[in-house]
Length: 305
Image 1 (cartoon, rainbow, N blue to C red):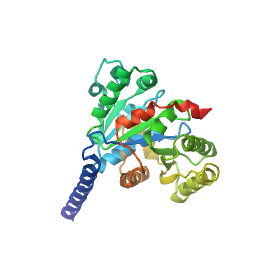
Image 2: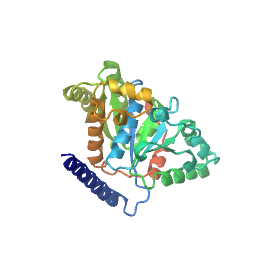
Image 3: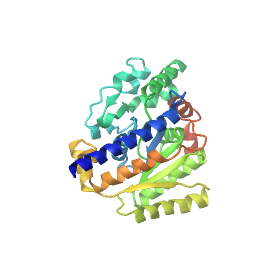
Image 4: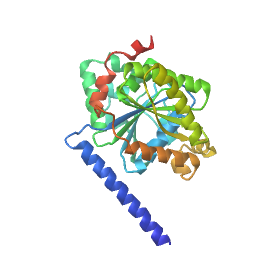
């Protein structure tokens, strides 16, 4: 029986590898900078966004994808804490020419990489053209062989958050089944619908015990957004409340690794599988260079008025 189980696991790994290889060949032929870019945001703080990003990255890596996280939380960057890593430098050192991007990139579990953004991202709008070019080239090189760039935005609704959300084209909106969180999630949807109506917005409901409950949250959001904004979001999944999540945080480990068979881990693995199988939005232009160009266009603060 153990031999059969080992053979089955090997078969699954081979099938996954073949699927990922086909995806890479299709998406990267003649496109050295073709990483898929997904921003993860929330209209409200305290919903578990960064922890979700870290575990989603690991779960995606387990399917064979090469994943990089850009920590774009300018105030409370803590991707490194949840992965047990130590940040010594960030993008500010790359922008001012002190270090190269390879000097600041952190290596995490399952081959994921982390780019500490911190204060360096605040400097983008005020950069000289030469510095912008250096940043684009550095980031493009960093994700040249990566399949996915996950952007962990700051919590809440602000110009800094909206800058990254509008530049990404694909957005995962994390919320919880509480009135205040859902109100803030709708506020984010409203801003996206005004500034980038072609964006693909997918909702994940955290701390929700059932699929039916998660679907109800998305239905309520769509009831408002379709009626008043002519905009629709799509459900991506839910993550139940799970004691193993906080246990893993105390260990400074992703819960999908520390407790791989827990309900939360099973849910995130399912979300990763579904996300990896979704097509890119119509008209999607992958890669860091287009992303930076979108980041530098009209300031997102215009839409907050």
